[in-house]
Length: 445
Ligand code: PA5
Image 1 (tube, helix red, strand yellow):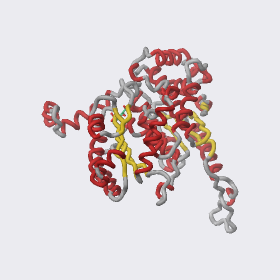
Image 2: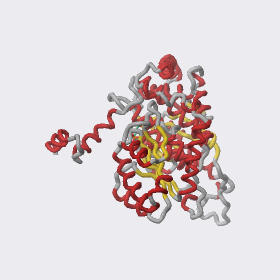
Image 3: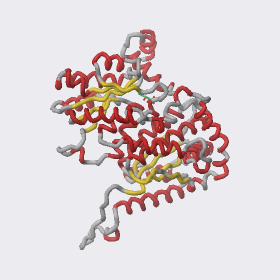
Image 4: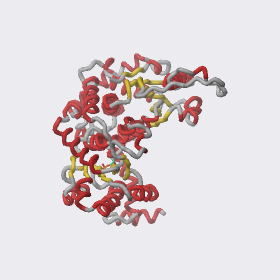
């Protein structure tokens, strides 16, 4: 289970004012439960953890096993909500280095379809040339250009290298039940496929096959991940009193900070494995709340690395920020600082200490310094980097995001602003159907 501490925001906002959100939070919770709020056709994530069946998990695990048995590398093709959740969990749980070793226990997981970098895609296809690889093609709409383009390259290469029959076994589609090009291709080619439920939006889809299949292929326990999320679903339920509901308190606190001029939330970690959890969180809150000229800007830093880059700005820059720190209580491994007879580096004062003790003091020292520098600080503690904790953390952020978006007064479940660049790109590329836009955009160049 995770815990949330907001004590270090109280010099900047008052506890009384945070607790004054109780009625708004209750109304938001009710709107989510009853489906009476904005975006109510996208609430399938709300009780997803507790409704995932054993049969569904078994199907995912069996498909993951087929990929594990037949692939040295699995490329996960997807972007945004069809990419970040899987990567967040896989990177949080993976050993930082063993995937580089020759003898692998699980296929190497690589990602594509999240950029349009020619060099990236060239280098990926080069790397895959002598590899037995498979592909998980993830797109809810089935028409996202970045993903479709990468998949076109990967499908052809997989078929050329492994033959059409094997390609059929090692390409899996995760997409809409009926619509979109990814669905048509999957059905025509006879790929194994999983459905992304209509009522679950991309950035809330990590606990659907979108996240669960790649996570299972990477060798992690999706039952435990879902169990962690399910326990958080209970802990953040409508019946839990405001003061004991971490999602409610987080949503209320960030809205109160925003009201008081803190327009930027910086999600902080002191563990490099959490980098992509922050990326996932940025998308969740950015796409959910940044609309109607409103919304906290979600930023993220990896400490202590970024204390040597962004630390200066955070300590002394414009006072429009607050920090939310994810702290991991226990490490997976143990490593002590050795003693050194010569002590030329002067580090013998650390001899015998665990590296994490040093890290934790960096964390505490940073919190005190930043609070002194005018930066309110929230702290989320998770027990360890394991499936249960990460599952809890993901659901906590999702639930808080739904509540927070409703408090802000926006529809947290749409993303109308994402279409603007696509329209221009299609017009510039002369996509059929965009003739009028192509003409109009040429006149602006
Ligand atoms: O959260 C969202 O809805 C988006 O980020 C989508 O996940 C992203 O645009 C990818 O869309 P699709 O899965 O349709 O390819």
